[in-house]
Image 1 (cartoon, one colour):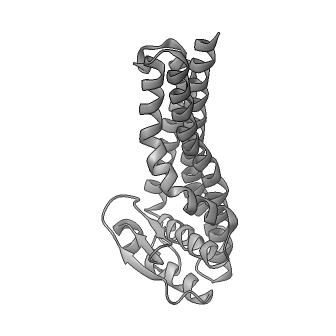
Image 2 (spheres, one colour):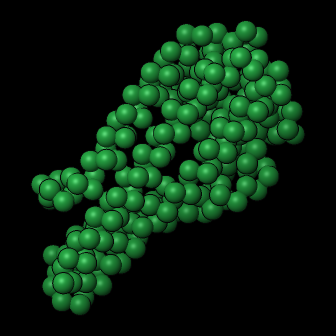
Length: 231
């Protein structure tokens, strides 16, 4: 129903445009620097392993998983999972992404507060991201104070999604910062090679900014509907 509301388009369009631009940047940067080999010939998996071992994280495993850019660090099992292009690739793009995920493992080791907060929020976000909008719509359809209360409760649940997206930003930015420092300090890349890594990781960071903007704008749109109904 919201997609036919001009007001919704006004709120959603900036985030949509930024999201599409970010995805194009990621694919372009990753594609370009996936063709540039690292001077040391090291693969993403080996780079991640070297960074982990150098920081006392020998217990963290590095695994290959399917998919394109499906790379992530799982704090529950202390496992760093890399997509085939990253795991096996001796390229600037592969090494940069692998080092970024290793940066998350270091955050976990050091009890980095934003990462702890994001991990703790996962259950509430999983519920709020789908239940919040449902309750919100039900509340809008219903009349009276009960409907108003249900709608506000749905808005509150969805608000956790927006907060999660905001908390994600410092987590991702910090992981990229660590990655760039470690790649040079561990002798994996030369300072000159960091330009390619910067392009890949900066493009990836933009996708998280777009996701945060989308969540915030959707939340503001929901709030505007409730405020307008009350007038």
